[in-house]
Length: 288
Image 1 (cartoon, helix red, strand yellow):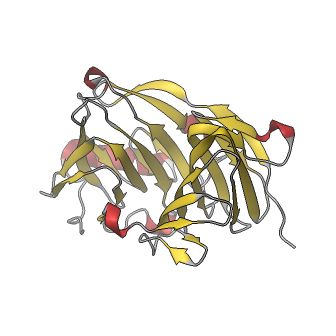
Image 2: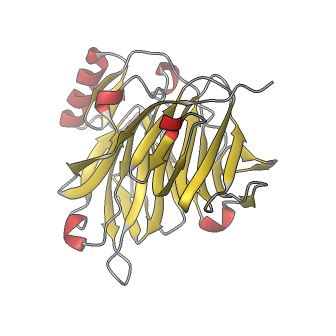
């Protein structure tokens, strides 16, 4: 018999200033490590004032992690020091594995009405993969399947499987699930998850009950971190609910983190920043 997961903790995202002056809301970050292992950070950068985002995220390095960008409005133009470049459009995902190191920039642009928005999730890499070759996975909207569930939910499947349909992102170390779930008013979404995975839901619209107990009520801008179990159920409120459901297999290793670089030890961090200063940070060409 399936064991139902309940919400262990819930908290609000908080206003944060990042990059060259981008105003966003951070659902979790450095202070929450290692509660959300293998995940490190989730930023919600939605807004309709270009002054809040046009400064963007100029050139900066990454090593030891994967960054997952999912756009809803506007777009993000990106480029790196190896000559790769492109644009992430609404409904698209870029799954970037920094691995041994990459230097890149991400510059957001609004749509015709000035609205821009999306999410960036950071996932850790285990020690044996931290120095793997960098790579990009550019996932177009047309390749992301959409399924309707028996409880009335509509699910965009970026990674993972819902009712026999799998998303396009596979072969990732932490075996992640990344779903964009919309549930109409009074509707339900019931879903099996691996019992060993860390599971979280970030509410991006409406509200709902994310646990059978009374304190499972969660609304837009809040993150719900689940406890143990292998199944969860969400019941939407009067305005419906839309949320990102993310899960992954914990790594269980020490985390040494400073800025955009995440390693296992302070010594490895020092090596990374020393290499960045002296121009030896990049080890290999990124592959798409």
